[in-house]
Amino acid sequence: METRREFLALASAGAPFLLPGAAWRSAPLARDPRPPEEAAGDEDLWSTVQAAYALDRSILNLNNGGVCPAPRAVIEAQRRYEEHAHEAPAYVLWRLQDPRKETVRAELAALFGCDREEVAITRNASESLETVQLGLALRPGDEVVTTDQDYPRMLTTWRQRVRRDGLVLRTIELPVPAEDDDLVVQAFEAALTPRTRVIHLCHVINLTGQILPVRRIADLGRARGIEVVVDGAHAFGHLDVRCADIGADFYGTSLHKFLSAPHGTGMLYVRRERIRDVWPLMAAPESLDADVRKFEEIGTHPVGVRLAIAEAIAFHRAIGPARKAARLVHLRDRWARRVAAHRNVKLWTSLAPGRSSGVALVELLGIPPLELQGHLWSEHRIYTVAIEHARFRGIRVSPHVCTSAHEVDRFAEVLLTLAEKGLPD
Ligand SMILES: Cc1ncc(COP(=O)(O)O)c(C=O)c1O
View: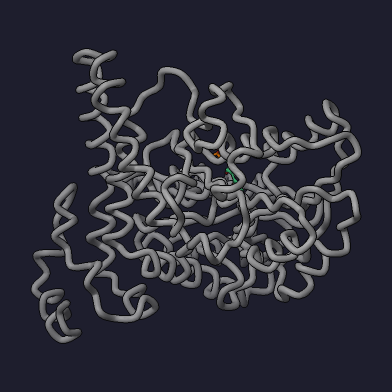
């Protein structure tokens, strides 16, 4: 590893930082000896990462929380695999490409810090989580505890089980923002009864970027024999997430969000001893009962998108998970701290360390979020998403590592002008 002085000398030489496309690997980003928080604000450094993406910068995409772009190298890998597959599909897809998914499984396991036999590659967080939600054997009257801030599709899935299987769904309200982990844990604890079989919660709440104390809640569940299902859609590839820090038996995530893997990729982690207890969504032979691959029995599908996950992981590792997490918080702070003091601005996201991620929810008092979202798009080509929740509202803002500091500053200026003057007539 270079010393700090050598590294900075290399950085000031400039050249290694400006290589687009697949050549980003020669950038010394991963070897940067500075603490992540210090590197997080070095714009020269992050320009290499930005250059690795083929973006349309005539628009400013601040809805990366929905789904993220992949860097060029990932898209190129995906395209190569796909072209190859079409040369002789049955041979290439099934004989050559399919077995290589095992490398991706091992890479995902290494990133998450679990055994490769605990990782299923899926199409998205929805598939991962529904596999567990619909696959756990539950009886009429069994209770599921979740929150009113969980993802609508996941709530829909539980509600379908309520109608179909007679489960009871208890939906708790957490404070927004939640500044005190004790209150969060107590809210879950208060909802538990002797009939509670499942706790379902987000690791990072998609509406506000709030980070929940998943480890404490997983421990709470384990102590009472309750299944804990963690929705990691916004957390994986965003925070530096390690399996041991979660402590739950089930963790489902998309990979096409902050990991920047191809669209249509996800991961399901199931603790090894629990694989047998979950039925797959699509039937698998009995011989796979205890094999995590039973969750991948989906018939013919494009394998290339799955193999290109390995390229996204290489990109993620080259940045460094901790450095990436720090950069996303840095970008959030850069706009959110600037606008927060304005009398007409309400932040629904805590900016205290460790409470939230790079995603934040902001309300301009007096401006309905949908109108604000529409104005930002039509007048400034800034793309955000309006959130209307029963207890809070605003626009959700989610930059990514491909977003520049200049772009975030531009957004903050527009927001401050609107906070001061309101929407034009
Ligand atoms: C918290 C949460 N869970 C699950 C999902 C579903 O993700 P996907 O559409 O990739 O399946 C999302 C998507 O935004 C989400 O935010």
